[in-house]
Image 1: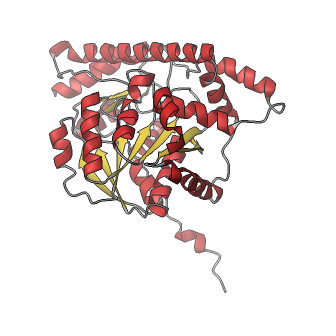
Image 2 (image 1 turned 90 degrees about the vertical axis):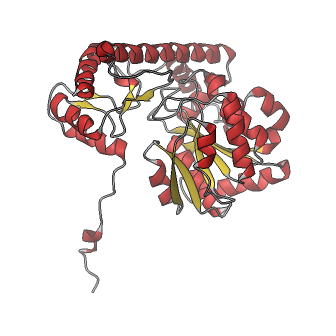
Image 3 (image 1 turned 120 degrees about the horizontal axis):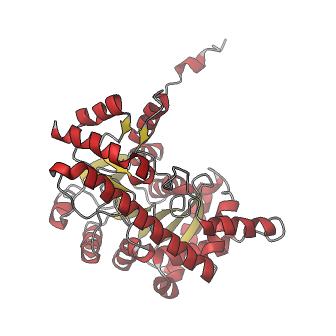
Length: 389
C-alpha cells in the first residue's frame, strides 16, 4: 500500500538573499520599516510608478483587444532593434533568433536550458557580488556554477577566469551592474569580448533594466560590442523595470549566431523548449511594449520618462550619501542605475534591521527605488552611525 504521507518528504525551497530579506520585512510588525531591497520603482509619495506612456498604451491596446491579433513578429522586431540597435539589425538581422519569454527570469531560465540542452554546456561562471537568483536558475537547468570576484579592472577580470574551459558560459550584465552600480567603458567591453572569444566562452547577457543606467543606447553598448566580436551571444531581456510592467511578465530571449544558416534551427530549438515549458507567453504586456517601441511619439515619450527616473534615482543616491557623509564616513565614486553598495559589515546590516527597521541585502546593496524623500535623512543618519561604530 502506498503511503499517503509521502508529502511529508517535501522540503521548503532555500530562499535567495532577496526573497529571504523580503520575508524578514514582511514578518516585521513595526509600523515604520524601510524597504531598501525591492526593485519596484516608487515615486516621491511612496506610490508604485506606472509610466504615462504605459497607461496611454494600455488604453490603445485594450481598444483593439480581440479585434486585431497579437503580432509576435512585431514584438520581436522592435525588441531586437531596441536591444541590438538599428544599425546591427539592418545588417545582421538574419543572425538573430528571438522569442518572447515570461519576464526576465523566464528568459534567463530559457537561456540556461538552451545552453545545457542544445549547446551541451555544463558550467556557468557568475561574478560576485551578483543578483542572488542566478545560482537557483542555473541549478534548476542542471548547470554547475562557478563563482569569481567581480572585477572593475580588466586585468583582474581575465585572471579570475583563468580556470574556465571552452564552451563554459559566463553571465554578464549590460548597463549598470547589480548590485554595485558600476559600468564598463566601451573599450573595457571590447576587452571582455576578446577574453570571451579567446577562451571560447558563451556570453549570456542579462539585460534587466535597459535605459535606467545611463540611457537606452548606452545600456546596450555591451550587447553591440560583444555581438561584433563573439561568434555567439545570448541575451535575456526584461521589461519589468524599464516599462513598469512588473506583474505582466514581459521578457525576450535573443540568440545571435555566427552564421545565418544556423538561425532557423536555433529558433526551432528554442520553440521546442518553450513548448514543453510555458507553451506560449501572455500577450497584453507584450502588446504594450510593442505599441510603445513601434510608435515614434510614444517611444520618444518613454525615453523622456526613463531620463526623468534616472535623474530621480541619482538625486536619491546623492541625498542619502550627503546624509551619511556628514563625517566623511564613506568614500564616494560614480555609480548608475537603481542599486549601489555600502561598505557595511554584515553585523551592522543585521543591527540596522533589528534596531532601526532598515533593510538592506547582506552584501550592502541599497535599492534607490524605495528611498523616498520622507525616509532618506533618517536612513542616512542610521547608516552613518552604523559605519562610525
